[in-house]
Image: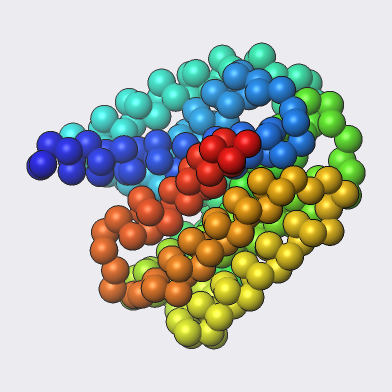
Length: 277
């Protein structure tokens, strides 16, 4: 049991779990618009997600505490390097238009962790995008939306029509909602200057906000030109399950409540979609 827990922790801390979630949302887009399942794109998204998340999470630690890194962190560093190499290999298999689109989000990810603006724009000495008050959750949702909706659409030469725009808005809302339990969990750690949603409106109001957003998320499906009954059912189920996790999110929660269960909701969404289709 101890070995299993160590493996699970490594799977989560190495960003493999969040990468699977990003892949799942990308796959959902391909299914929704009946696009070809491009293995090169899927594999690229996985390795890019691992590389990007580990860069953001561990850049400061690796930079300032390189000699004192623990064994598990060193292993993640090595793993991230190989993921970066594989990401570079698979990015060359994508179309030029896709590469240009990826470059934009690569820049955002880079500056999310690296200082680049004058000190007066920041909250603390860590002068990067993630420390600008109130920006974090919306920026992450924007990047996830771009990668999981527009990236597969552009790579398959699918036109940006009204259904794609609606899906992008839905995806942006969904990512914000599943980040709310994380924001509630981190309430005891975050600086007040971060101006997170729970800090500004409180935990209960944050939960109400999440529930209302889920209602908008589901209702928007009825405004699309192409609606599949199976997709409506799956959308309802994933909305209800997500609502459950938002409702019962607390500042004091189990170690896997957010990092495994909430972060795994996109994977569950994909599995339900594959099952009903």
